[in-house]
Image (cartoon, rainbow, N blue to C red; front, side, top):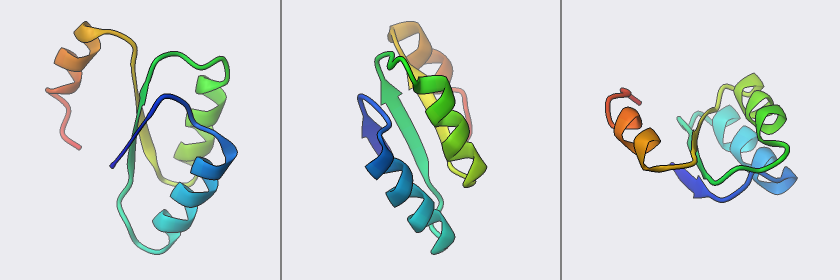
Length: 67
């Protein structure tokens, strides 16, 4: 489980490596990065799910998601 304000290249590479090693990964991004949609797509391509949290209402909805 990763909590971060942004997804950068280092995080992408580390998450992909951990996923290939058999770890189940989820990344929670707090805030809104300009490249967020693209980066989330790159994570998903490696089998890593990510969730964007921009405000409190999203936290409530996320509480209902089974990870």
